[in-house]
Structures are given as structure tokens and as C-alpha cells.
Amino acid sequence: MPWINAFINMPTSEKSLRICKEGHQYYKSSDCPVCPVCEEKRKPDAGFLSLISAPARRAIEGKGITSLQQLSQYSEREILQLHGIGPSAMPKLRDALKKEGLGFKE
Image (tube, rainbow, N blue to C red; front, side, top):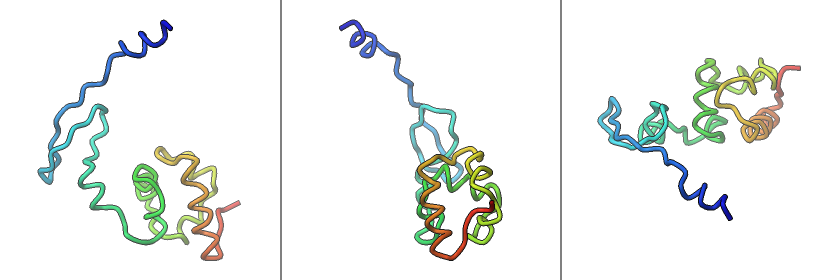
């Protein structure tokens, strides 16, 4: 099974120690500058933004969307084009809109 040796010998990404502006220390192997400690503190306890992943939440917040009424002004296609929005976020957003009698723009 030569593929096993190739898998075992794959280079691993080295994690580097980082310190955010709040002083939290964390290790990351990617270029992503987001501190996991700060991100966890920012996560809302309630509302539609609490239902989705942090990258999806940042994408929506980055577009200035803070309410379901604002979200309903966008089409699904427009939201899916935001970096950080994946297919798993869409059903959650659809359900949240539906519960309020809203939907994505056609």
C-alpha cells in the first residue's frame, strides 16, 4: 500500500504561536488572523447569527447584515457568494427567515 507511506510522510503544517491584540496566545497553521478566544467571546447567544459558523457570521456581518429583515433583501445566490458562507449555513438561514415570515429575495 504505497499510498499509506505517502500519507504518513506528508508534510504537516507547522503551527506558529500568535498573540492577538487582546493578549490571547494561540497556535495557527494558516494565515487566518482570527483569534479563537476572541471569536468565541464574540459569538452571539441568540438570534440568527448564533446559528451559523464563525466564518459565515463574519461574512454576513461584513456585509452589514445584522437583522433578518436586512438578510431578506438579498438573494440566496448573493449570500452564497460571500466568502465564508457554505452550503450548511443556507438551511439555517432559510429556517430563521421562514420563522419570521420572511424569505430571501427572488
